[in-house]
Each structure stands twice: as structure tokens, then as C-alpha cells.
Length: 219
Image 1 (cartoon, rainbow, N blue to C red):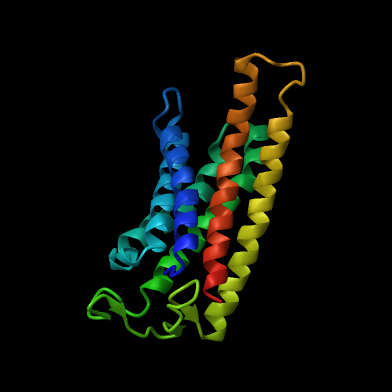
Image 2 (image 1 turned 30 degrees about the vertical axis):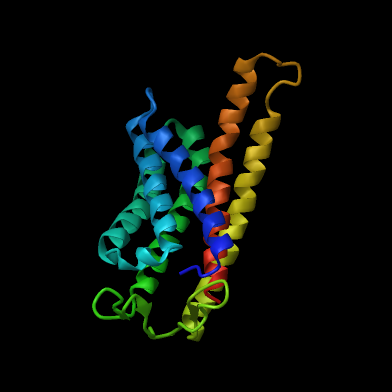
């Protein structure tokens, strides 16, 4: 999908870092089952985004990815009312909805990439053929495809704006948590704790910004 080598590697690095964080949090001792599911879904999203920026990612089956991301969106929405006490549920609901939005956006993007039946004869010698509603002639620019139909372009624009908004929201959380470390704390323990608390929303923000970039490239 990404033709510009520099942008491709930059996005790969961003998604790789967020994927590594998600995997680490999914297997860390002491995590609850719900947290492990959350971070496993973040890991799957990061891996899918890495694949999407490379040509070989277009060869991956879309069906299983769509199932995972739709299930992920439902998971975040349905599990939110059962997390902790009432205060914890109320505080965690916006984050759960944000993750559900990004999971749904991923499912939409994967479906869009597969809408022209890319897996069966849509390439000849590795070159991508035209897809309905897409212009595949942009290989000399930043991306190898852009949307041409009004509806999908509008949806991509809305999702890009939503992703940017969520990224800014998570960045605000990351800065707030980083500043929550006591100013007098110089020992490695307290400082590391604050950094760890900020790392989660920072990674979510990076993922959302990367997704926003992908949506903008489709316009």
C-alpha cells in the first residue's frame, strides 16, 4: 500500500514499537485475563498494520482479520461494563469505546483492501490491477492506491479525523500520567513507575496517528 520507502519504514517502526508493547503487556506476570485479551488484540492490530504497509500484506487473507477486529470491537464494548467497580467502569468506558472505534476502523480498512478480490488473479507478476473504487496508478507517490468513490473517501476522511482526535486524547493522558510522578522522586522506582503508566496511552496514540496516516493516504 505504501510506495514511499521512508514513510513505509517509519510506519513499520511505529507499529513495531506499539506491537512490542502490546505483546509485553499481554504476557507480563500478574495481568488479568481481560488485560491479556486487550493487549493481545492490540498486538494483532499492530501486526496487521505492519503487513498493510508492505506489498506482501495484500496477499494475506482478509476474512480472518475482519473476524478478529470485529470481535475485538465487540469485546471492548461488551467487556467495559464488567471491569472493576462502578468508578472504574465509568472511568474506563471512554477508553473502551476508543479502542472499539479503532478496531472497527481496522476491520473497515481490511475489507476495503480486499474489496477487489486481490487474492485471486488481481495481480499479474506482482503488479496490482485496478480495484473498484480505487485508483492504483499512484505508485510513484507516497501510496500505491487512492479511493475514487465519494462514500469510501468520506468514510476514510472521517476515520482519519477520529483517529487524530483519539491520538491527541491519548497523548494528553500520557503527558498527564508522566507529570504525575512526584517532582522530588529521583529514585529509579518511582520514575520508572510513572513512565510505565504513560507508556500505554503513548503507544495507543502512536497507533492512532499511524492509522490516521494510512487513512489520509487513501484520500
